[in-house]
Length: 165
Image 1 (cartoon, one colour):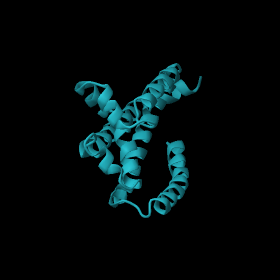
Image 2: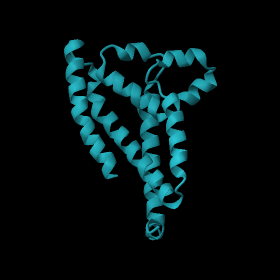
Image 3: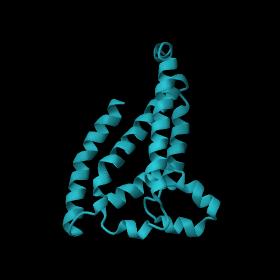
Image 4: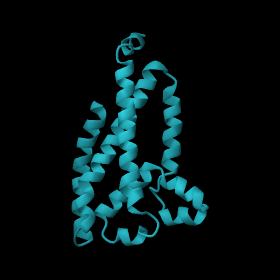
């Protein structure tokens, strides 16, 4: 958890520079910039939930790191970092596209773009709705954090047994 919080604080400096450059080159920031703290909080909660959950698995089963590597690779390719959501909508059938939008990282990444890039909301408005930008990532983050904290409370007394080896 300390690593997630330290990375979040370190990320603030990078985001400050990014926002300043975006404001200069785009001649201002979009109105959606007011939602920037919300997307940061959702992102931090999601990362904290994932880190606690996989830490619990890793302490109990050392091979969980290989599962995590595979999962992160799959999530990387199912997150629109280098391609637009409209390309995915054109390539997949409707049910596949809706399953793709259920990935909370899709909403978080597009929310970051909408909050910082002027005119980006108009480009993705018909593909990504408010539900996908805020509700799915926020619910996923809250559920994941709740499950991971409940798991921690359940296994808290036996974690030291596995850490000794």
